[in-house]
Image (tube, each protein chain N blue to C red):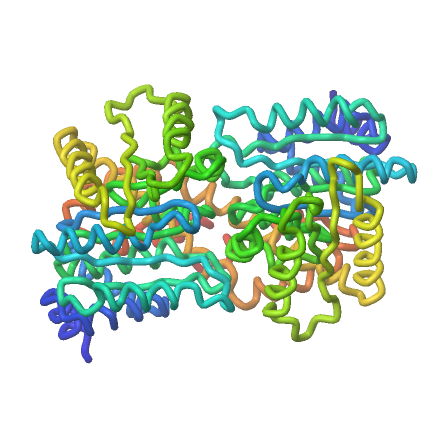
Length: 319
Length: 319
């Protein structure tokens, strides 16, 4: 369908059009840029929630419960699940099927899984672009569900307005989460599966680590909530905490600043992506390839080759 | 000291000069580029080993045992430990102290810890540059010890000639390792702490996953070795497997190809780094900053701003 019809359909939340638009974005062809430009004027209404944590913490179950809760308030929910799974596991597919049977048929819910298929490059960019489509389509909440392992996944989680880190009461879980950089990005924590043994000591460990966190200049103190997502315990409390954080961001003016800062990261990525495409055009890629043997033999250094390529690029541009 | 004296001292394996050179690299100033160019002609003699795996797998203990074994053969060993720990944990420091008391005083061993201090950017580049210093200083083996979480850490592990993935017999460990992308980079596996219960089923799980791995075009089948590093069990077998893999790489010609491919990644990074520095020069960074408010308000899209900046860069270059 022509682009203006596609865009009109997206604005009317036609699910097939939304799905098609995200596929265009995933393919990364030039149409996606034009599409995103056209959609941008309708963007900003959706509230973006990042749900992250280690594998097995119950992120999907919690996302589903939260979605059902929002639907009970008649809010529309878009879910983007990022799965860094290797191509041969099929983990993403399995999780999707369970999810689809629960909430997938609801017209007010849109679910999309974006797998990295081995390569992490450009994932966060495409994921956030996909969220823009859902935003323009009028979804009230967009949930990014990502496993908290790896820089790209953290980037996605950080791109949300409110980031929720889900942990389980297992020994060392909070330490690992901290090492993976999850502590710094959490607006609040959910200790899921809190009916398990070890829940109290996990709370203590988590509180201790939170106290070590640098709180200067911050008027928001991350809370720790308990839940048992599989029994739908704690869901309303989580939604309330998200609302509390949203309120805090709006009243303090931080929401606008946070979104500006996210756009800044994103614009930089887009420019660098454009530049790399031009940088590694055929002849320079070939020149690089041809130099590698000399570098291994010690005849010239990587830095000398890099400077040569850099200067070649500069002199080729703008001619 | 002047650069030529520093370089002379590095070639003579003066530990203080080596340490100083790595500090210059960490600081990232312009001297580091000149230094690395000068060192390059003496590079290529060291064999690079990556030791990676989840936190708590015993990577440090295993690195220490392997180092002691190589020392018994009168080989010099340089260790670069990459720790993605948050600034407030001090985990890297603690591990270092244990290590220093064991092998740190040996004149044939050099140990350096490189912490990411919150930001992962440029880590792999600096780590590999530091390895070049050790290579030029005449170390026979360079061990990269990195936690197998996050893209940068994987990049470091992949930059080695032989990559060893260390796991422990805990339920789901091999699944998580696979999800984190460790399966694809392993030249062989070490199941450490193999005296623990669950060791046999962990072996079965690991073998099953290995069978799923894509082995087309590969004549090297990753082995699974057992060890109890804390009791120095299995160390010689690991060293032998490394030697076997080295031999395979050399005889097949793959060592040169692997090193070429690593240099290619590295040169690209250097060029892109140079370009980004010029791209985000003061005036363009300011122009980006000034546009953010309009983007949040929906007046213009990130893609439009990105194109403007890209074109501005192209017209400013080569004038």
